[in-house]
Image (cartoon, rainbow, N blue to C red; front, side, top):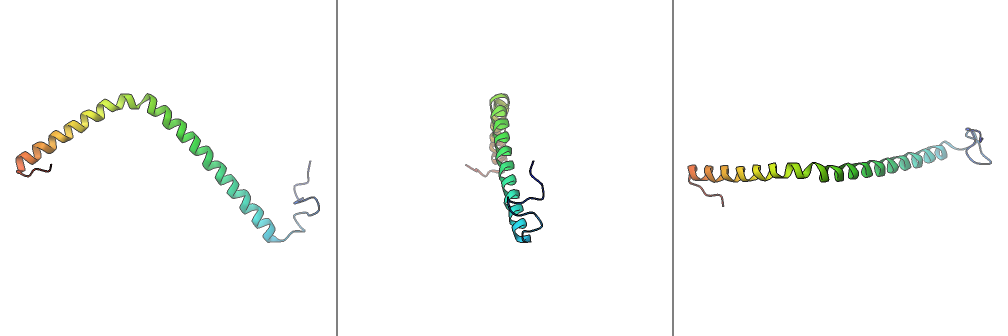
Length: 86
């Protein structure tokens, strides 16, 4: 197993400049961030697809009824105020 203080085959952590350590850690952090973003995106897409296939057909009729009710209320409001919005 490689020594944890060994940066490369010829240099240890004590023989490199602080900037080299800094940039290696920046690149490693960005790699982890991009990897996490990809994993989260895949998980959200999978959950979204599952919800779209299972929950959406149940909610759709309720949303259609709500839309019709809102249009009816707008028509009643415009009738009582005398101003037509459409």
